[in-house]
Image (cartoon, helix red, strand yellow):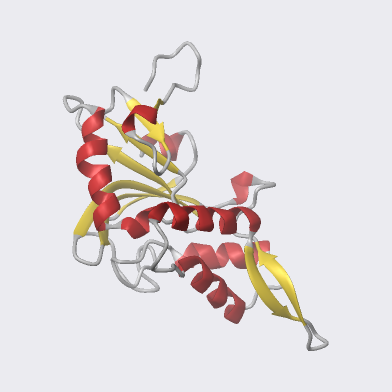
Length: 215
């Protein structure tokens, strides 16, 4: 969390037992089931698409959240990635009454620093049957792209994968619908991977300088 805040300029919020639910609350979540922070998503949609309206914004959110029951988690993740990369397809009414197809941009790829970066520590997330608390979830424009699981230094990093991450996949799968990066660390060692990777395919996270040892 400190590295995200001090070196990378992320806003960091500690949520456990302090998060206030509701539109004007800490993160704007109405329930602990929500993993999309619509407050920041809406800001981005209006900032990046000069034709955006409240109605279209709501439609864009719905498209992002819609999941077919037949889809696997990997299929959902790939579909969401395509929407985030290419933009959300929308039907936009022109002044002449005709509609045209447009794509709503979610991220500012041209000027990355203009996106909103938020790291939430110890965030309560409820699944259908289970309740969990995640170590760090990183949001870009309200989209949960980064998942970080932290262990104590005397605990093997593999435990973060075997005991925590795989459990979250089963109990709060919605957190990973949009995920782009997974990081597992015990303070001495860190591994980075992507959804669907087995632990042996997670790579060691290196320091910013080549001469530094791995994290």
